[in-house]
Image (cartoon, rainbow over the protein chains, first blue to last red):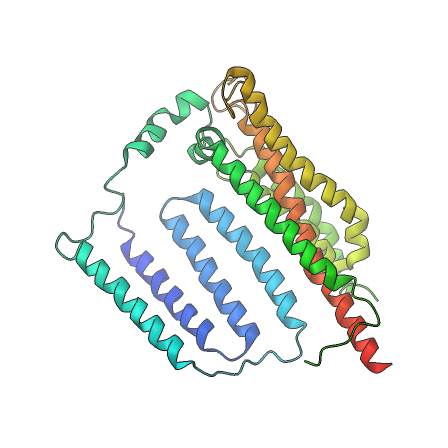
Length: 186
Length: 151
């Protein structure tokens, strides 16, 4: 396998910059576009890592989310956001960031990071070895999510069904708003 | 006037059929090439969303009505559950009891192909309906709010 570390680091730096811009910008539309740029870079990173299945899904969902968010933010009159910082929130997030760094140093500090993709787990080894002969599906990802773990996928579909039902129920009330209902001043 | 300019409408008419065909390809060949029911369903939903953005909601709803969308959404979810129940005939929930076929052929790998199609219907129609809910209903309520304020 060729060395892809420089490409991945370039994408990582791009994604970090995009995230910081998305947080710091005051315009809501710019923030949405920055978040989408991060998502597209993540999709390219999946391509470099040899996961075209996830790259396709990430790309397509990112496009859909971008359209929906732009459609949602462009209707607002005031797209600028007041930038005020809550001191408590900053302190809490700093504490959690330090905890994550501390635990990471505890776990990986002595041994160092493992090689990329090196500890191939027993379960995934079985899938890779026996996926094609057992399910006759050339795409190993599909054979995992729709054959070995189809029950899991049924749970996912149920979650999607329920969440869409809930979103429609909430938005529906907004759509059929009565004429005489009091208008909340923005 | 509903929708965007005539340039956008012409290109939309030209492109939508190809997007739907590409989404169907991603779904049907999900067990052979990268892709699958989820990605292909979202691509088909994107075609309908493009139609809605270019032509306005009337044209998009005439192709796939709201009630029809709900029916297809629920039918996809139920079909996926039904595929799981068919596995009970062999002894286990979601057991792959269909014939496996030859490797690398379109009609192979048993229940994976129908499950992909069911998930594509479920994901595609539900995402299209949610976009319609976010775009159309919300705008209608904004208009009615403005009209209320003016009157």
